[in-house]
Length: 154
Image 1 (tube, one colour):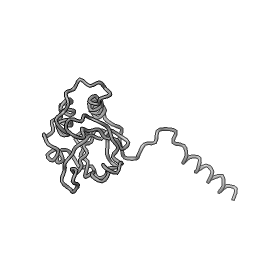
Image 2 (cartoon, one colour):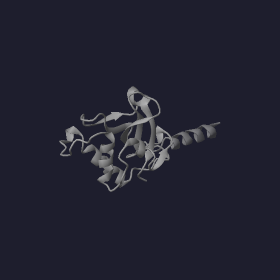
Image 3 (cartoon, helix red, strand yellow):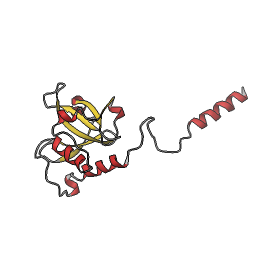
Image 4 (spheres, one colour):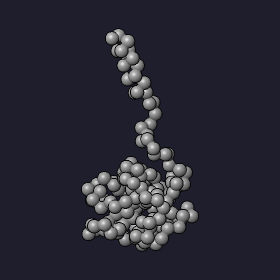
């Protein structure tokens, strides 16, 4: 009995030894290119005192961000939604993945595109003329409209 208790204590102690960041299994760290894309995406935020001209709409914004890194994407969100590879679940999203949402009326038709930042946060131009902002994928509004993710950067 004494040996079992010692063995159990040793196993519990070993299980608690991670000593590092909380990293989800199977999700590799972001690539330098993905980090650079996010830096460019954030440079459009109003608080960055951006010198960028205001994009026409969400797909114009996403296209310009990726074009700055020599990644050509189609002009509209529906065409972007077939680029790269599918991301199985929102839990599998990685930095710089493309997010696709239904339009204001809901349904399965793609009406909006954004760029995933990290930890449930994405960056996008919500409406033409409104500028770029960051929001939570887990807010009621966006969670209900989320359709899928696509990975265009390895």
